[in-house]
Length: 346
Image 1 (tube, rainbow, N blue to C red):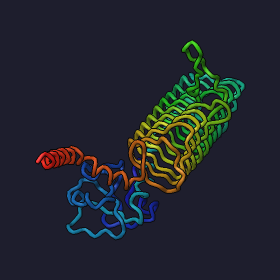
Image 2: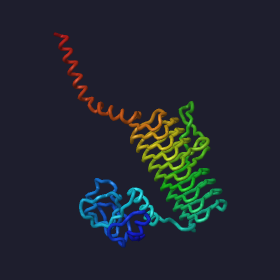
Image 3: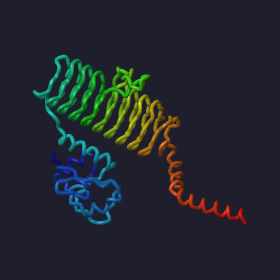
Image 4: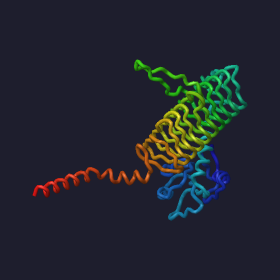
């Protein structure tokens, strides 16, 4: 991809300061730069780099006032981060193009329904009665099980596995090696100390505009469905257990784990390595700090939580300020006890 600064500025509703005809071929970090690259200044702490960057073009906010001369051409925009997100989408679309059409090495069951404009890569398997919506891109070595429904404009990256009867909405992206619809962790203890597997006969329902990272596992329900609601964003290495519900526009960072039948509300923000016990209900808008543990339900909306077991964020910070002083406080307490004992003995 190669584009003039003036053409890109028009796409971003921006204004150009400098050479409008300079060509841009790729994005770069502001501290690395390089001829023909475009970068951005969004955080003021990186301002020093704009005066030395070798990038050809820098995206800046409309109210940015340089304190020194800038060699690069500037494109001034209303929102730098939204503009760079748009820009990365454009370059990403060029760099991440997958297969075109259906590979001769793909195995597509004759009873599967394939929409217009679908692409399927080599060694991918589309099983009986599966349906794939229009313009969906399926990379190499993807498995789509029997009766699976996948909507339009989805992207399944190499190695994705979708088990039977699961449903994927429109505009969803699932990254490499994620597994949707494996059995939930259901085992009944027996009198002799062994465990008997409980059949998991439900499915996973993923609504529209969901993004799933690499190596994510979302288990099928024992009965009914595990629900990933519209707009959810899931990072790499996340485990979602059977019959869980993740509400609309909730985001979950890497290595979080959600035990069975927990219901997470909409617009929640869940940090990395957060753990949820089973059968909890988490209110809408809850924010949970990384490495926290949830052992009980959260009923009040919009809380920020921290710790294990998690408590309100500000309470945890105050408690930690005391906790880290405990060794010194313990020594002082010991000294006071000794003084009191000495006074008693006089």
